[in-house]
Image (cartoon, rainbow, N blue to C red; front, side, top):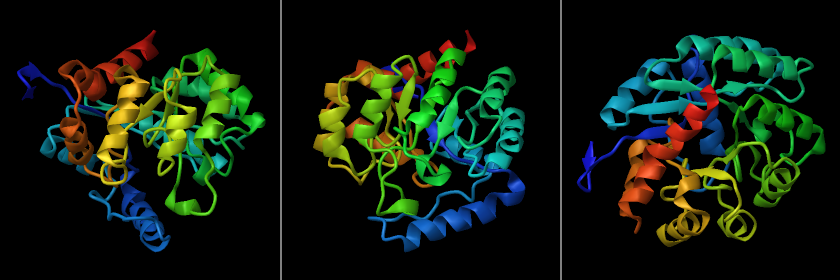
Amino acid sequence: TIIYGIIMMYIDFHTHAFVDAIADRAIAKLENTMMTSGYPDPTPPVTRGTVGELLEKLDEWEVDRAVVLPIATKPSQQKTINDWAASAMSDKLYFFGTVHPDAEDAFDELERIKALGLKGIKLHPDYQGFFADDERLFPLYRKCAELGLPVIFHAGLDALSMDCIHCTPQMSAKVHKAVPEMTMILAHLGGNECWDDVEKYLVGEDIYMDTAFIEGHIPDEQAERIIKNHGADRILFASDCPWHPSTAEKSLINRLSLTDEEREKIFFKNALKLLEEIKR
């Protein structure tokens, strides 16, 4: 795609899909949570959660590649999910793996995730029942760092837990200080609906943030300020599909006062750097 006179590539760093057999059921359950929780401005899903439909939508939205982030909500799920993720990888889709912090074999599974060629780890403190700064997780974080696996956290508010945020900006800052060697990626621009605390505790730290599900939920001027002050080299274009189309966050980034170089970094260069580093 030629934008602003340059060839632009798009890598959506935060999408979700499920095994075909359970996809519709999983999306229906998540949709019910979103729509009945009192979440501000809830949105219906734009896919029914299959890999095939995700690929169709990426073509429709003119997105070149995407990162898919599965989540094991029970310890017993992690191996099955990771096997599926490895089998579903393609030249268009990268997959992260998943471990459940309560799994007795979580460390062994991290080794297996690395061997399978998966690109990192997704942790969701709300759905997996932990607080991000719980020190019992620190050895797991250090193991991810040792294996060179980036860790992406759901950060900030989630519809599942409206009265208790399991990964606040303050918690993320504590984790980063304790395990600075871990490549930490915070979804939702550092903390969904916690934007002021993101600016207070995280902006400027050596942490990646993605743009998943922020369009329409954060004032443009605050999004621009966070991106500018944090540095475009640590921002990853992301949508949270199926909860937003990639075009939503693409539109947001394009309407902010960013340079061509900043947009290139956000839309694809930072993602390629992270994904290529994982190969080594």
